[in-house]
Image (cartoon, rainbow, N blue to C red; front, side):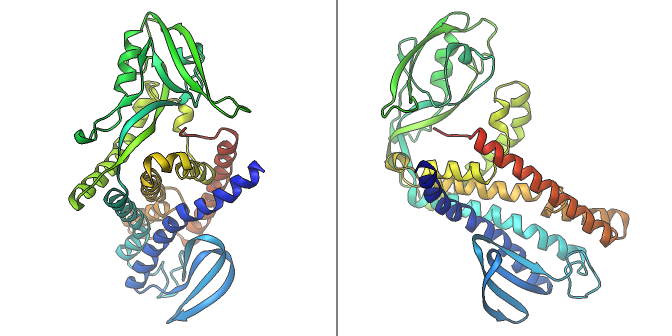
Length: 379
């Protein structure tokens, strides 16, 4: 029954979360291809197999497909320049623009989603708790007995439930917990957590005692990654400029976090397993948790919409990676053409994209298995 309920909830979330983001990506390619004069043979809503032919306008056939998410654009001759109306026969600037339009639409879509989320669904946390996402192997937290999913209630007698005044527009921060654990470096520590035990209806309080060694990392004394478990929040009002500024800050934080990620991993401030790629199963799982009744009761739709905005940005960034079969890989071939002064042999390019697609599908399968075997949770 649990599996059935997971599918019943997960499938609509998957369609609502990823479907529109994939659709706007393909819409970007479609609009630029039309602008460039490229022959677009088909614009499909959903993914094949085809369910119905909706209509034909000009030279483009519009179809509805059985897999109810995303879309696709079929252009004439993506690697074959023999047809003057083909994609491959167009000037380099139009090919570059057409390829970049998909990721651009994801960036624009992410910005719009985040702006609307803050404008109409913003909430201000007034109370939150620290929840452990993951525990680093060999860390003081592991020796202490902390587990992913634990909610930290107290450290050495200090209440870790943080209360925020909405008038100050403060944001949750990990400083209180970090400061308390920094005081315990080289000393004994007692942590009280709320833990959900499998098979039990209600979570229980567990008291853990141990010692933080003197050589513990002062930036992350416990060796855990955290999320904020909001327990109370209030509706927040944003003006349009404020909503735009908040959306811009969120996007900037994504790029800043990605830039810092290698250093954080090297310094072991972030567990390696927490930085691994997440596939459609993991994304859907997180999406389901964000529309969970407990989350929507305390924070409304803001967390889900912010997540959708982040995913849109990440789809755009991922597609710009210089990997054959992705938009970035195709852009790379055009840049090579610019440098060489002549295009790469179409047959070789076709083979490169075919191999790239095989590698991407294989990697996706591995990520799906990891998502199932070691799910990333935000609770």
